[in-house]
Image (cartoon, rainbow, N blue to C red; front, side, top):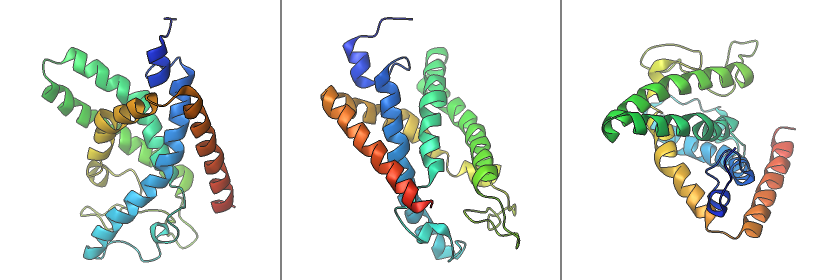
Length: 200
């Protein structure tokens, strides 16, 4: 195992470091809430076309964590970041690497949405899905994990992997280690309390 430099530890790029996993825990917590806020903005726009259910969980409580977004950031860090690095190293241009990355991301995210849907979004006795459905899409399909609707979200994980995640890592890396560790503890504990309250 390679010896980690102080810079590796501070920036958290190295999966073998404590900093990497600490930062990942923070991202999971923060983006689970931020993801809900993004849904509110997106659904507010889509509601202009009348395709968002008025009873959707999106509108209930803006502090309700949408864990799929936290999981999404973890997938970006553990799966898509190494993929991006490999593609950039193997392809002649960033454009060709980006095109292939986008194509793979569509499939990865569709599978992730499908898995989260089976775990968290099972229909009730009336056949209604509690969190989301794709039945209002241009191509009718009620189940989560539908390729047509999944494709329109792919700019988000691409942006996260290529821009947001590296910027967050560098931003946290500028903080003193004690401050980073204290911040992480506060965020994780706060998130656990939030989940205990919202999911109870």
